[in-house]
Image 1 (cartoon, helix red, strand yellow):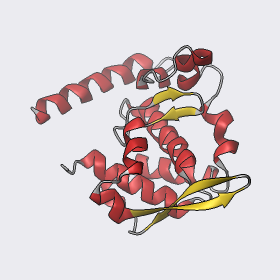
Image 2: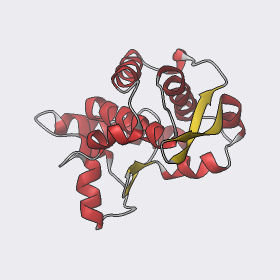
Image 3: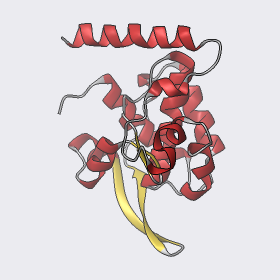
Length: 184
């Protein structure tokens, strides 16, 4: 597997949330990553992890990561352990860090967002975060549309609203053009 800067950020974001939040299972992790990516995009026109999210009934899901968790790549397998624990009336996947978070992969803004999101949802269960990721008019809600948009991609552009949206979207297009130029 090619290790990219975004992959390093993804692994380290998972490590950060595993180290700094409680009750971190797969669903909560997906919600935390979604909040990180969409808030960073809202501010800068770029996601942090590069994940693509899809509108599922229970919220936004990074499908590629969901599939990988079933059979983790070597780097993810070395970074975290994916155990199971009983919670209420079901079994939850429990994500525990095996490595130490490396902040060198992140900008100051990204580190502030990681810390802010982790602190805000430190003791929350995934079910407690539903209102946050399923807010009326928010990107997931606009795509899912009461089930009509099930499994449709959630465009990052939906995170950008207001007077600065044109500038942020222009930055996003420039960033994508640069990524394509340097990956060619």
